[in-house]
Image 1 (cartoon, rainbow, N blue to C red):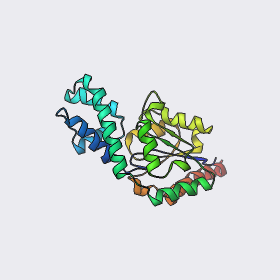
Image 2: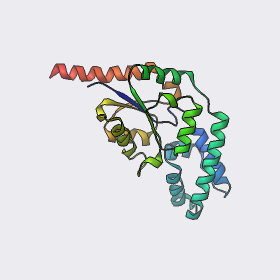
Image 3: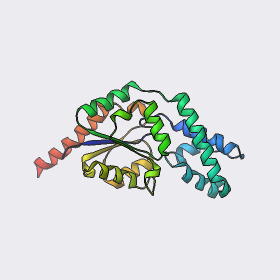
Image 4: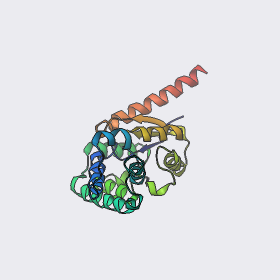
Length: 216
């Protein structure tokens, strides 16, 4: 069994946007006197869609449900402003994806972010041309940690889960990747998403499969 595709999470993997989402959401929440502390966001909210975060805030901090739609719209607006201000290409990511593409790997993005956010971030990061597809939380019924988005990605590729490497950075995404049955490369931040690290993980996976086959 060989790896034929690499599927990337976006925030914290291809785009260093964790603080962007935190800043945008807190700015929107601040209109009504609510806030999420940075540590709280990192440990309890990171990687979740905005609507899920708002539902949790209603349970935990009594945020009125009727404010969800407006806060979500404002958060998306603020996020777009931040993307235009801060999102730039990263050479190591362009190099990694271009090399992988040239070597015949299929590439995709599967993110809990909104479709417009995913599209704009990939465009501003100059990565769109290397991708076979981009999936957002609007393309599935259940967001991560549910595995649906990765199962959908694998189906779009026409591959088996064991032929795919998923690159993730947070617990919700890791749970989704494992539940989907794909191989996993866990990174701490965008700096660890390099061509060498990805190829090393692929070599480890294929080497383990080969060793298991020889032993059998």
